[in-house]
Length: 231
Image 1: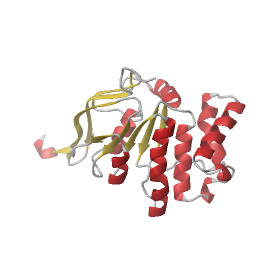
Image 2: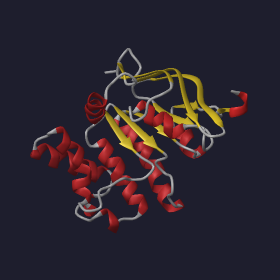
Image 3: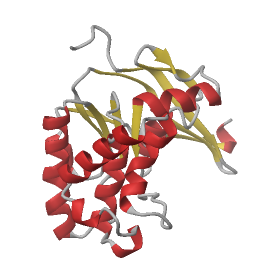
Image 4: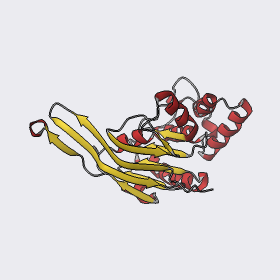
């Protein structure tokens, strides 16, 4: 059932980085709302802060100003233990790098979030098996990530993010670094995830074709730079 409140609300968001040459101001007091069931694409050229915005929504990075609310919780005010627990229960994360554990199997990588949640073994086996089947990875279940292609590793990373059935899936450049053949497989799969999983997806991407798949776009303006001599 759809909620009356947005899944994500961004209010007057800013992020300031200080460098030797001056200050870099990101987002320009960005405001945005992402409703339950949305597939939102965060777009803009390299360097505008797309990854930073994903990290702020996930509670992995603090903004310099403004407020971000996820599922009614102000993540900018939550302490690290509370945010870690909240993220583990409600948010699935797919980073630019797959960040898979290379010393355990594909099955164990995907199962890991359920282990952290304390799910029963029978439930872990069932849900991990189902998500691997959805991604066409059943035959790779007991292979190690080092034996997989880059595209397969990315699929494993997305499966791991989805196995807990999160309310919000955050993806940072999910097709970054993949060749054309892998892109041709993964792009339709992302559309299928949104259709079949019925979840809310927020994806940072440089890809125009991926952005067109989304139901809405959140464009990020170019950063404002204040040179040290102007301060």
